[in-house]
Length: 206
Length: 164
Image (cartoon, rainbow over all chains, first blue to last red; front, side, top):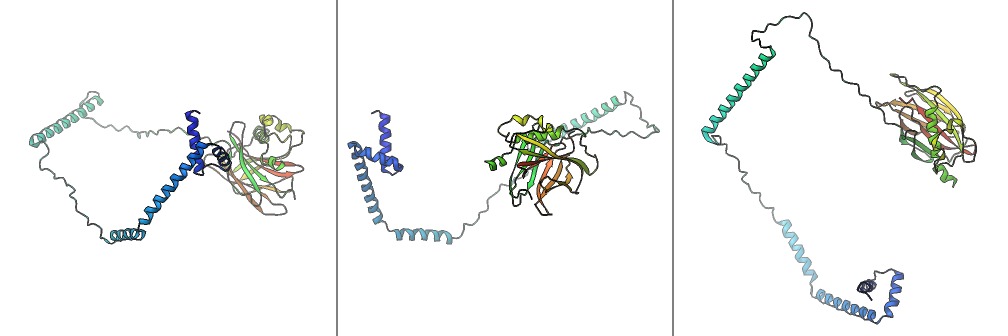
């Protein structure tokens, strides 16, 4: 017999011993194992092992004082419940001390001021250049001339958005009352769902 | 078996009806823009399992040969109604089985679809049970089916407005 077959037979024997086979399987296995000397010996070995373990557990349990064990557990629970909660400790959050001087000292502060001034000057220059360009190069004083007409208001016309309704029909609610029925959908010509309410008409015609 | 068939109606029939309702173009239905009314059409069809004639209005529909929902082999248009639906005002349609179908246009939604409530009165009763609430795009029908009549099944198609 191959190794695989041996393993399977061994597994079946253990399942039989543990009562994990169904009724038919168990009957069939029992007959086969009864006719097999090796299987019979294995089953007897398992029986002896089981009895030995049972005895060992019983001996151990006999020495155990369950009352004392539960008393100790109860005492421990009471001790935990009666003891006051630990006091909260103030933890230093490590508030930052704002330095009187910025990082880098006086030199860094001066450098930052110089940089700010530089950007400001550049911004003013850019604005002046823009005005020069817009005015077409004429740096003269701009004079406002009344145009005689109201400035036009430019209104951007939003394109009309047309939303097509979802195709088909659907049942929102149904009440069959004393009758029974069902709700389903059939496919329309364009594949849209069309609601169908089917009433199982018990009443028939009047 | 019959009960099962009732639960699984001819999808092809309903496909036919949908195309039929969409293609019936003698007078295209129109939505009165800016008003609270919409033109609606209601088609009442009798579908039977026995072999028979299919109304020419419904014949040109691709679902005819679509299995397995080809149980109904004969279809006839019993009635066709055109009416104006005003918001909140019910319209009653007499059905061949003596009942009445009530349709109420609840409102037109911002997306252009219509919210409609339909109900059918119980036999020998005047009150209407709110059967269903449907949202339908213009020109796309919804169907109420299943009532027995003359050995067949009534299939009611309702269409509001017209496709753009």
